[in-house]
Image (cartoon, rainbow, N blue to C red; front, side, top):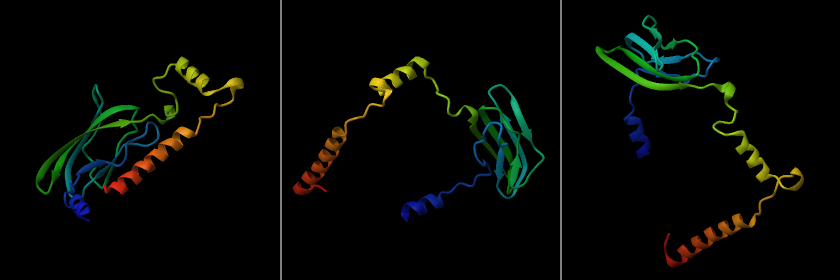
Length: 152
């Protein structure tokens, strides 16, 4: 309860935050805005230029565009209770259409790994179980030994 109280009392009010990291081509950029925020200006930049900016809509949710895959930077400026704020946050748009493709692997490495995992006739090779059983037995033996000498 002490840790939970510490985490809850040091809670920071986020004036503007991303609802979730956007996915390329399926979900638009969605921002949650705290109550009482006025004169909000939201800017999204990529590595080259400004991709999108909005300064007209103020509400609980601000909808942005659907973004292409890449790394972007969100900048939000505005006023709340008479004081100004500025928030900057990088985020990444993920391309889910390429999610299951192998990354940074040459085809030769994939073929070599497949050849090592198969045995004669293409059947999968079975791994011996005794190393895992020996490791579990040694771990239990160490625990019993520590209990007997008084270490807990």
